[in-house]
Image 1 (cartoon, rainbow, N blue to C red):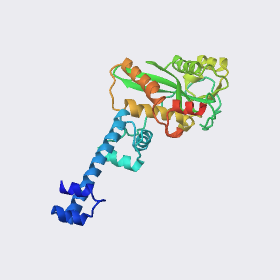
Image 2 (cartoon, helix red, strand yellow; image 1 turned 90 degrees about the vertical axis):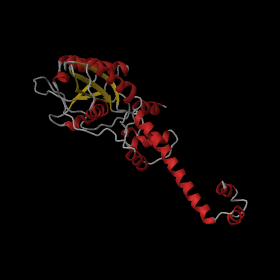
Image 3 (tube, helix red, strand yellow; image 1 turned 90 degrees about the horizontal axis):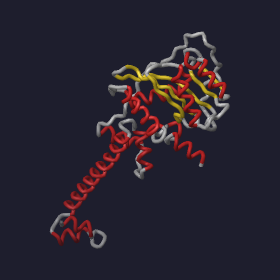
Image 4 (cartoon, rainbow, N blue to C red; image 1 turned 45 degrees about the vertical axis):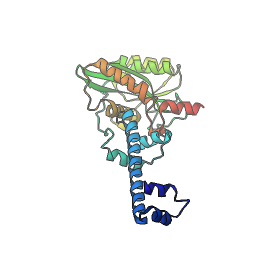
Length: 287
């Protein structure tokens, strides 16, 4: 209590005088002050760690230090990546690690193949200028669940998607039709995919021609030609399905729907977009 009195009145009286009157030593007061500062620092660190953990858990362990730092900044807590990384390490929190995944495509067919119009130029100046499409497979106890998506390269937003237990032509047609509906039937869009049989099929090409779209296909065996779509699948698998067992396709369908529509498009911060979500990026540009 005496040291607290001295601390409270240190700007009114000298520390030496108050120490003498109260019968304590100046060195004792300074030692108490040092301990007080140390306790405050420990408390402040605990509060910061709690905020970091809250963001980390809110995003289900999908965010590492860079995205957590941006999230904290937008919430009014100033912290750089190194400070956040130290907090994550101190708490034993580690974002889901990147892994290699096999790409699924079947280009062994006699169907016509479109030229590569995209040529690895993934920049778009406006929505509905360039789309990329691809298929992947996800495991369940019932068997594979196949997912086809269409992404708009302008915002990396998933504008079309479809799921099925078989990798048939209807899968990619469903994803493309959804994209056309979501984007209000645009024309002249470059739609890039690999040269798999589904994308070369007559049904898929009929949609391309009817809607006056421009079909583009990757070169044989060059995964970089469609790297943006593959990057999305990599993100989905690392952040949603890796290490998780799904008993039924219906269960996984629900989780994929939630991931795309309620998280990836609307909330997940994308590094290419300046760490904002695809939906926010489009809204910002329109505004």
